Length: 353
Ligand code: MF3
Ligand code: CO
Image (tube, rainbow, N blue to C red; front, side, top):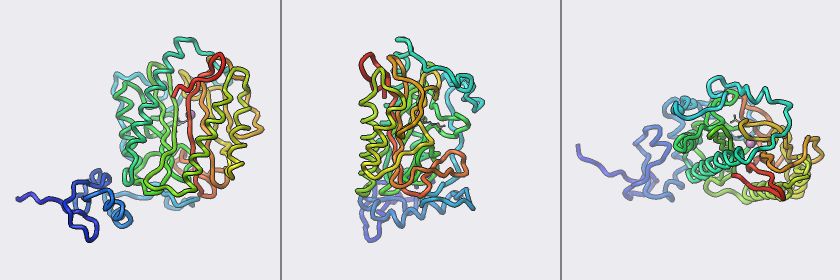
């Protein structure tokens, strides 16, 4: 059979096509999946994406659920990804239950030794590398499941275990939170759309220690309002980090964050907080991001914890999807988040991620 060169699928374009829609590649579509340029791909997206929904049994799993916004879950989730047996894993990797974390509830804030700090440094460096790799993969048409695959592979390539995988039965290797999702979105088969904002939250477990960071990114062209939300959210984290030093109370960060958020017309999520992190994924201290909180503890040298404010365009309250993880805003408006793992030093702070 003669080989035929694909022609651009964009209407009225007959150019030779060298690009293939990534979702179509994944779904095994050939017909109508090639484009001559990003431009033609973008122009055709509105019509083209319908091709994806009709193939290979994709479905919306929560048939009677009242969504708060336009985002929909797109199932099936991909099968659980394997971690090579030689990679060391946290205690919940097999059971789903973080036993050591549960046993450590009510413990004091850990003061880490120089050796522990060195180990966390390495875990955090890997975590940052993986987040950067994931962020570079973002484009219109890629699914969050495909980003999860990239995250999983980059993590195990570095000899690390993706901390979210099976943590309290979380099914994937990272969290991907689109638009009105506040946090803990499960990577699925929804292709990213032009104008989405996407948070990718990465945590890696290496040599006995976890690192944790996240960032919110633009998919294609995001409107001014979305750009401003993301900018102000990043500033909220920066302003909180700026006051980290020995003597700062863990309840003080919320004031700085909420002040900057409300000044800009936004609200601060109250249900999810920053946390201590070390051999445990989540431990003391609790670090609320809202003002007038009652968090316990004072920053001391060699404490390690995260700050990870979630800032909303509308109300701060959340509504959970039936998957038990995905937390969306109650009004369906957008939410953004940034996170770093931080080390309290003798006179200030070191950002480990
Ligand atoms: N990485 C998130 C955090 O910042 C926690 C994710 S837990 C998961 O604390 F199970 F949802 F992955
Ligand atoms: Co965290």
